[in-house]
Image (cartoon, rainbow, N blue to C red; front, top):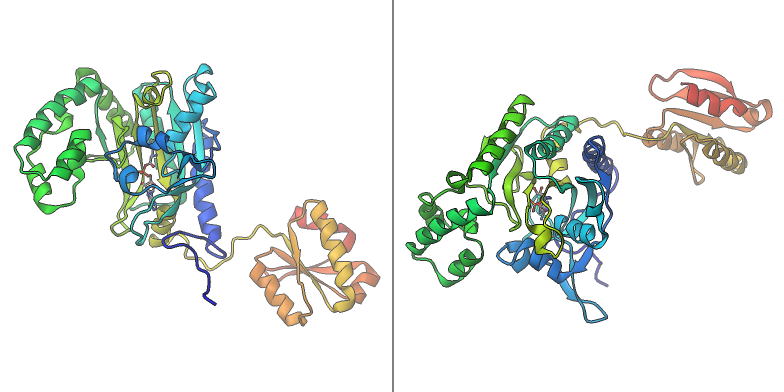
Length: 419
Ligand code: HAM
């Protein structure tokens, strides 16, 4: 019989590496929480139209990479390829914009894109994201970028850089678009490329074909078309970043993979990863909420790629220690089969008292059980035989130092907590 394997290109995490995945994810989430963002938990599948309208039909994400299927009721459903459109849908549907603005939310979970799998590029991957909705202010742009930067620093990452640009307001984009379309008309583009350009001409800056890249070197840049207000906003964001000591490079040719962006946009790139070096990105999306049928509120946010950030941490040697990070405080071993049920009860009682503990299962010899205690990463261990049960005393062993302290079994929880 054929062995069943995971679907092609998905990422998965199991012990011992899963502890580092969890550490990365929790560190990113903490950075969001401590800046006032609150959890929003949304479905992983949505009405397909949400992404068509929200993310844009000129994007690879919508045109080539969505997992779309018909459900049993004949509705077109898509596994979420990104988080922002769903957040906007929920804000509109649940009238969250009637609350105090800005709405600041964070999310964490799986996202799905049918991309060609390679190192750091998966078909199911994980993001931690934040969205700040209802405020068009350089201060909030700065806050969002700073949350990501603080999260990376908290992880200990060093070798990454921040690229920023501004896509301006609608007036800036309209005047640039006019000149860009005239420029593109002068190029000999094939029909498919022309069709893409008609939906979003900025996409051509991101075209990987050499001849197009060469031609686009002379294309007019949106940054040169910013309205005075957009230019002021962008200058203020730069000033705030500089004051905060957050280094950045202005990249006027940056094109994000999603069509909803306006104003400040940014990408964090790791120097330690190969082709898939984008560890997070985001930007402002004024107009998205109105496009989805809601009020015309502005917003800004980011999505950080947990899988790639883990790879970057590993590439920077941040998780080299072979030490198991364990939540366990105590590991209990029965000397022989007769003490098994006593130990089982004791462990259950200790857990009820809030002690993180585990025990050696099965009929293994003491040596094997000691190995399990070592592997568990628990801080203390005890071995319980008939003598211990009779006397009520055990030798509490500190697994790091090897030192031993005689304690009452009834005082185990107090002793473990006190040390
Ligand atoms: P995005 O740039 O498409 O933005 O994705 C954000 C991050 O998710 C990327 O920088 C990357 O680290 C990770 N990522 C994307 N695709 C994959 C993949 N196939 N495999 C592994 N990692 C991947 C968004 O999704 C926007 N919703 C971010 C945002 C929020 N903008 C405003 N608010």
